[in-house]
Picture (cartoon, rainbow, N blue to C red):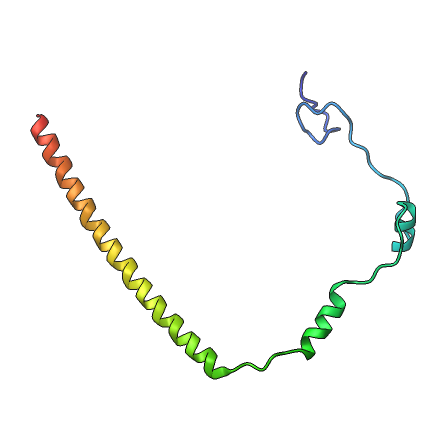
Length: 110
């Protein structure tokens, strides 16, 4: 089957059916749309109650604890950066050894 080049199918090759375009009048309200599709029209936003509640239920934050945690995290980060640097240095040394071994191998095979 040849691809449809007319643009009717959106230019999708191998598409055998035509696209349908809904030309009916738009819904006047959400209630009308819900009733047309057979649903019940009682809806309220689920996030509305949660947002209001969180503003009033804020916990007291212990700034001293947070500062201690931040200091510990900084120490951990510094340690991990050092470990990473050590691994990168070792990797670079290993690459140099491999290059030297390759050169020796090529020289012995001549």
